[in-house]
Length: 138
Image 1 (cartoon, one colour):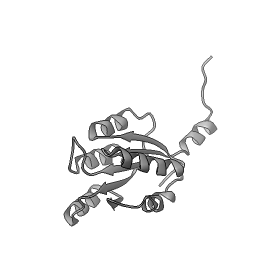
Image 2 (cartoon, one colour):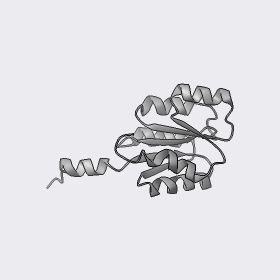
Image 3 (cartoon, helix red, strand yellow):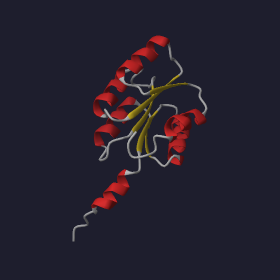
């Protein structure tokens, strides 16, 4: 017997927002993931650009939110942001950086970053940015 989800159960599943957190610093990645979980999101974590690309490529349901560190061990520019925007055009993308020059911030915004948080930041800032985006559509 094949178990087929009813339309209402598929809708209920989709009401859970999916987030991808990408940062090479395990403590930051974990802290951000825990914060997003408290906002009711299902969170996937990646420690580098390759892991982020893999998570995006193999996701059965696309990510609604991507929290992305600018500098990663295998990529330290805005290339991953370009990839995220190309793959997840409807996602809310938040860029985190400790190296936020005005030029980088302007380019990131032009490439589609919805928000930029300068490290270090308080998790309350992240919560304020994303808490009103916890519904099905940002």
